[in-house]
Length: 103
Image 1 (tube, rainbow, N blue to C red):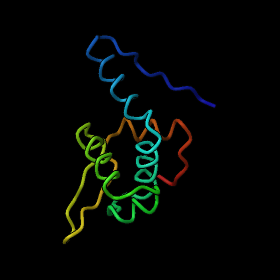
Image 2 (cartoon, rainbow, N blue to C red):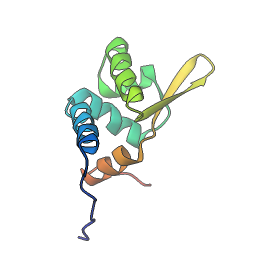
Image 3 (cartoon, rainbow, N blue to C red):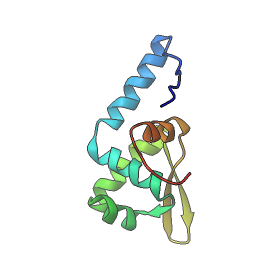
Image 4 (cartoon, one colour):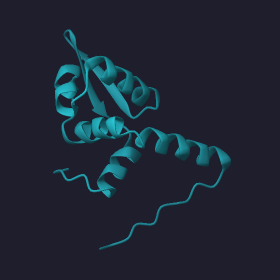
């Protein structure tokens, strides 16, 4: 298995940023949301709530945090908001921890 070299955080700002990332990833619900969006982009809130087993209000709160971090974006399609994973680092991290998909 080939190894990848990743540059280590070098400044206090870098370390703070990674700490915030890991705090968000430490929550199983948020990690589940990211995993589903990684596999099935452009899900609406009701489909995503069903997929992750959360109430829409709790899911909305988690999505707000993920959007604030810049990991998830939303696009309006008629009356629906569709969510997708947009952060390349999180995308790569999900690949590294075993997310299995076609692209």
